Image 1 (tube, rainbow, N blue to C red):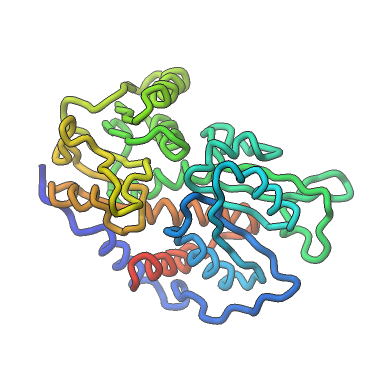
Image 2: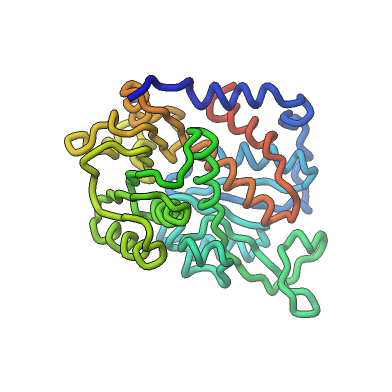
Length: 331
């Protein structure tokens, strides 16, 4: 294995600092909340680690929208009621994080093609019906919002994870061999999306073997050119990707069984967790000489796409990036 490259944070900071100040400034002035303020939110369990409010509220201020983005800890048992409550309160939209992305598939009124193709919902857009029967996002109703509202589920994770891996690790995915840890909502989406990028081989590792087998079976049907198997490989790989939540808490066990796989066997390691900025997995991988990146890029790009779905306008990505860097790294 070669020497580790400079940290992805340093690279992102260099890019950010090279941008014109007006293009990366996080707005300081936010209009006060009033009776016309509209709301978006992220639901998760846990949720205290989320940097989404910082990112989205900076973007909303930049776009001069009288909206606020909130975060709520919602237990999975209460997710149907929480989504229904947001709809009744005429929220603009929602983001969903662990462990809600698979559950929400059966809880929204309509599925966008992105959610149907990748099999998970991480973004909900609330829509109301026009007089002609057409459904439109609630931003189309600046004053009085009709009572007839539906929820539409999207997936903005799939494109975000690929873009982040390519940018933050400099890794071209075609023909690569990848170990993927986790077969839940985020893991399933990542596995299917990576397969669609024509990777050579996917090794799926999950605590519950049946879940990994279900994902493997779907990949074999949809992407037969990809060699997919369960468990760790015998030899080196190009990428190890952690799509589990192990690492969010300081006392979490390692997501990697080091007795079956040595980190130095991976050229690069990507952890979808972004807080802490360097998980124990990434620290160990860096010390083993691997290139490393956390999930802050994935968070950025999925959030930008969600904002574009809700607003119909381009997202101010560099403002969002700057807000994330300040929130997660403190600078």
